[in-house]
Length: 349
Image (cartoon, rainbow, N blue to C red):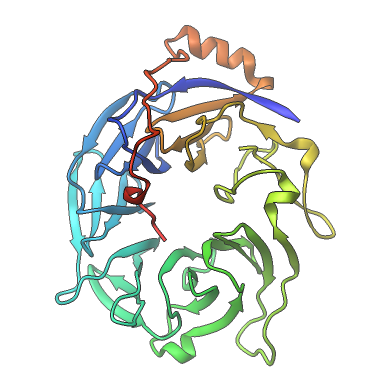
């Protein structure tokens, strides 16, 4: 097991403010938090140099759009495109009538896709083109749509995950919902994360940490798909309490503990190459993590309101040089969260 060193910590937010998501955009690091704010940070120092407040009445998700543009969505049923250069809203997407909570977004070229919370017995996937809704899929999921992901090289292929336990593969170039639904994967447990693991493989991770990988077969399917790799509950396998996410890195090195998932004759976890992040965010939940653009730094964010930067021990020389340039292990005042109302914690699912 290798150990990473914390090389920078952001300034603490107000007590009981959680960071939901962090994302590398161009040369910046962007975050959204429970105070309905978006912050732009320097990825080297984690200093906030720009912010947008009052994003939504309950922000829920963040995704990259184009260059210095990001999308946010919220419980107010709005999608906003934020231009990081001017720190202002470039445009909004909103349905004219009912505005259900939007829990997930995805972008591909000129397309924006949104997934909603279940409202009036309907959970909706909407495909937007030129700021207008082009089509909707309303029957494929029977509960909250928690994750959306486009295929990295096929712009019309979309994966959706839901708390109904299904992961669906759509062809968004098809208007009719029955024809657009290419394949259905019944994971059997509420989906927290799903997406493409390779060109023809999809992964599903549930809220109770059940993990499987499924192979895509195309349009004609006589039987329900069987997982090509069913790893089950990851907690005993990885000796952890919960799984934050599955992310990819362009780095050639090992991809809280961070454990590489290797594809040889089968998919396996390389436990020997685990990267350990000591103390992480203490007793607070880690909400999000991502790699820097060069793959050399890992960023984590948690319910303690902090963002932290980590590097492996092999990069200690670079870390020392960075600290000489002003990056320090700050020790912010620790807030006492023992009495905070857990019922108020935002649950994006």
